[in-house]
Image 1 (tube, each protein chain N blue to C red):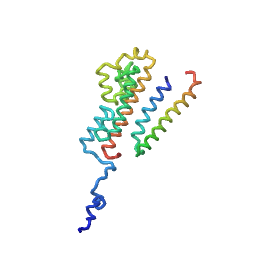
Image 2: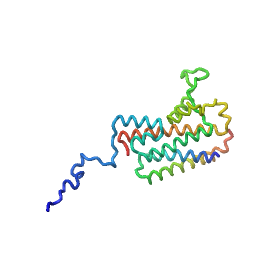
Image 3: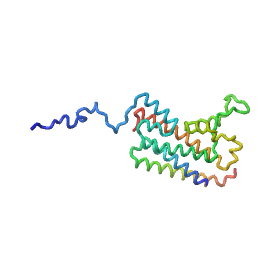
Image 4: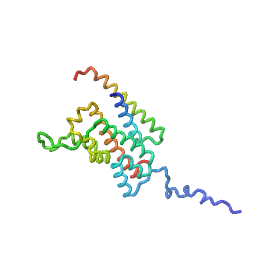
Length: 162
Length: 57
């Protein structure tokens, strides 16, 4: 009877520098890294789906899109950089630039809502609603959290974390 | 109304912040971290509102 081959029984232990553990973070190809970051910006959680992290991707999608939709339903406003009045050296009203930056982080949520005319009621009319500030806050939250999620997707794609 | 909104805000922020936390490796650690963030948001929010309540402006 032929003895068992100890080499083929446990190949990874003989070649530790040539084997990949699925528990270890791994660096994804450049095209997939770019696709993950773009997808993460456009659709919250999609970057994680591209990288195979389905559970986390779904969690981010539900939470961030939920925050954005809640903000819209509470009469939040979609901000766009407004020209400063009176004219200043910066040209734009800085606070609207910051609010726009916060909201555009939610990607297609912002762009599709804007295209559909949702949340574009003029501010004096929208601000008459008692929930206007709540709505804005949730929409800022959605965009800013998505920046964190984009960064997380990039870290996973670059092999910095699991 | 305000406490409900604050709680929802805290819950959403806690879910995402806990899920992206690089120091938590297991689901259990993430849940614990998320609960800490949620509690901190609510606790600090209530403390600030209590401290600022007498301020007239």
